[in-house]
Amino acid sequence: MTKIAFLGTGLLGAAFAEVAAKRGDSVTAWNRSADKVHALTQFGVKAAATPADAVQGVSRVHLVLKDDAVVDEVIAQARHALAPDAILIDHTTTLPALTAERAARLHADGLKYLHCPVFMGPPAARSAQGSMMVAGPAALFESVKVDLAKMTGRLIYMGERTDLAAANKLLGNAMIIGLSAVMADVLTLAQASNIDGEDAIKLLGLLDLNAMVGGRGLNMAKGNFRPSFELAMARKDVRLMLETSGNRPMATLPAIAARMDHLISAGHGAEDASVLGIDAVARP
Image (cartoon, rainbow, N blue to C red):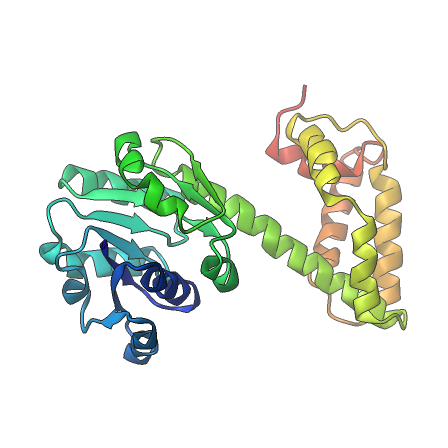
């Protein structure tokens, strides 16, 4: 039986701890809000009063916390109680620069640390679906690879560059948040057009978003803006969208319109609408 600890039992951390206990691990957990930990005792999770109490005698410590400051604070509270061979597995979404600094500092002090952010919510965590990225020493990853694989549908080792998983987590979350904002505007347009919101979302199923990422997205990354949908024409369509929405609040389209206007005034109107990303890439 593996003895592990979870520091942070919000929605995701609680799901991870619950599944680990059901899997047969000996699980101790701590959270700043004690009631969230005690809710897990029904699954066999032992509640700890402090981070130090939680990590005593465990081989892995999983951190599922709010941000960089909390990660540093909780590790500082727990480190004196860590076993010499204990491995810190940090699932927190953090700033890449601070993640690299943290990893360097902890490794220099002899602590074992991997950054392992995930793309999954609580339901995916309970069914071991979604994706987990890992950055840090290869030998350390190899020592926990089998255990981490039990937690996720896809386990992706990104290499020894310690900030790489953190950076890629932000890339993925940018897409998730951006899509949510665009869908909010789609629903606003549907409301303004007297179309049922569920019907509007179903319409999006006609669009092959994966093909758009693989085609238009890669062209953008390569700086290839040969037109298939001219920016000027796309700007006209955005005008129609804004006129249709009237004075309803919009999440993304007004900012997109402003960016388009800037690029058109700079002479890019005849290029593809993907020229919106011109300042992020080099031209061929």
